[in-house]
Length: 97
Image (cartoon, rainbow, N blue to C red; front, side, top):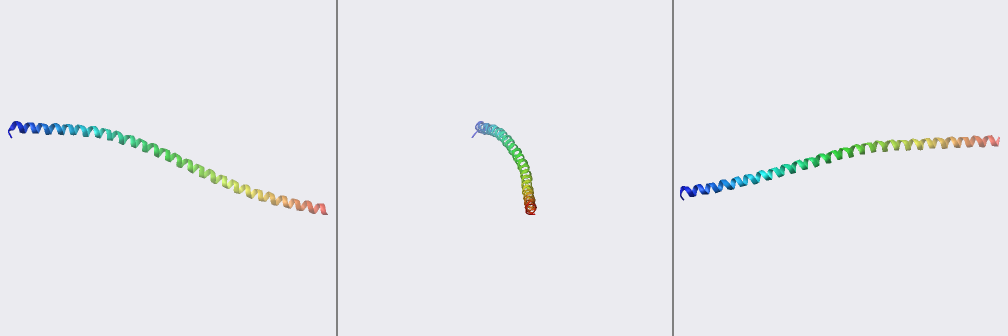
């Protein structure tokens, strides 16, 4: 192999490497864009999850408050029923006397 052939082979290798480098750069740009897109999606999902967690916490607090209200309502109803029975007994005693 003479010098010219060696230089030609070397030039071909360099052109292949340049082409490969260009292809890798383009692929890198595409992957970088994909990473940014996925990060944006992740951020949106995280924000949605935080919002759902806040709503869940508010809902749990509201439900607890409603449960306490229901329990208080049941207690008040029992007291009223007890008073009504006592009043009925007093009325009965008065009517019988």
